[in-house]
Length: 151
Ligand SMILES: CC(C)(COP(=O)(O)OP(=O)(O)OC[C@H]1O[C@@H](n2cnc3c(N)ncnc32)[C@H](O)[C@@H]1OP(=O)(O)O)[C@@H](O)C(=O)NCCC(=O)NCCS
Image (cartoon, rainbow, N blue to C red):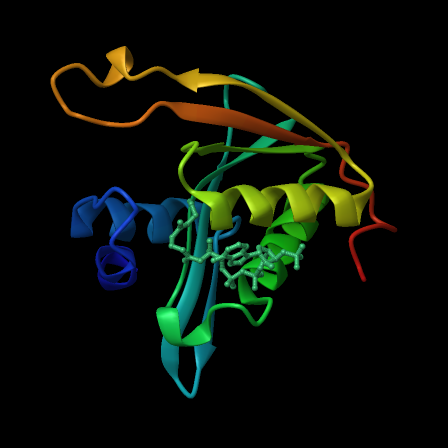
């Protein structure tokens, strides 16, 4: 996962330890995909303890060779299914205004579910202090219903 994120070139690179921790503690809500036994995609997600009805999607990444085939959408769908099993009703993610593929991914996912999408301020540039970092918009999608999102 650490390598996939590094190779994406656009996501924040966290330590190997961070990915080990997510796998260890949030493996039930995070999903990976393999193609020919090689990791091809991952959605790292954790239930929010602040908004108890929400699964927070921390990072979504698909290897370049596997993009444009609907893999991220399938991984998100699996996450949503697991979220529903935990009685969670919303997913949230933060997206930078310049990341069009990511915006499209979440918008299109919400549309497939017939779910509402609310966009609000996630983190401002100032929140990142001295690190030059784009603002992050907060996408909140729900309500996730079992019968939807299957197409
Ligand atoms: C964003 C990313 C995960 C999409 O993965 P993917 O498997 O190619 O996505 P999908 O094939 O499931 O496509 C999902 C939707 O996004 C659209 N999309 C995907 N790549 C796109 C691109 N480069 N430009 C515009 N739209 C794009 C697809 O057309 C699809 O929309 P549709 O359902 O309306 O047709 C992948 O490009 C990636 O790993 N990017 C680098 C990391 C990143 O930015 N992650 C997201 C932020 S956490």
